Length: 124
Image 1: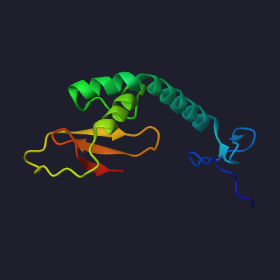
Image 2: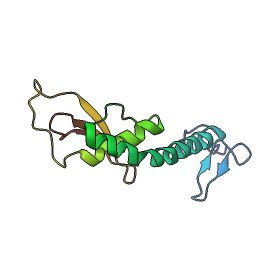
Image 3: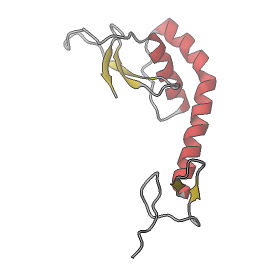
Image 4: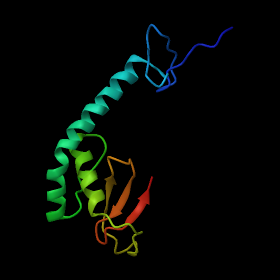
């Protein structure tokens, strides 16, 4: 019995009728193709918001609304990356203020930074 081809995005069964082969030769099901298109649109929207988010973060400090589930959140996360120190947080856990998400849209580097010292608390 021949193995059924699967979607390279989610692993579900797919074929050339239900899925689409990308330029990289990957087989993608319709749901994954729609999700990738949605993420690409969100990333384009975030890029237009970045200058404003950087200005706000420069004035107010780290933005707690940062995240990777909306265009506004991605722009805020990129702005947080711009004010983050390239060092680990040295605050004691008892005195450490809350941490906020940062993400570099260009490189994909992301993690959490301390709002008090702006040092990295977690990467990943």
